[in-house]
Image (cartoon, rainbow, N blue to C red; front, side):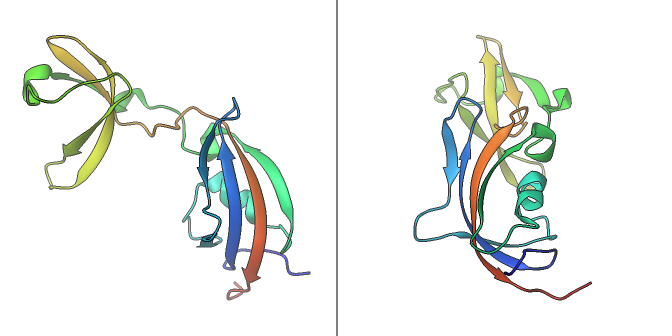
Length: 147
């Protein structure tokens, strides 16, 4: 049997669930996820779970937040004056705003809270602080270059 190792290209089907069982992500039926182990193309805990699996094997793993999307960083919370965004922008707690950085790169932040005067924005990943459960099936292993 072929076992997945670092530098191998793997093809997996997966379903990702929150601790309450809510599905937050899944590979489409016709498009499994393809990645190379060791290249940091997926979250660390997912990569660690796949490494060592045998082709055709299925398993369920719980990935702690520190090996998923991390722990929330309070430095990524920022209060801004509400007047800095247009009056026509409808705000909703939990909603996202598109922000353009000084270098013209675009990223999204979550509206954590707002008042008439200010908005609290959260640039942490939406899944920060969450342990995640993944059901993984390793469909294919293409052996890579050995170290």
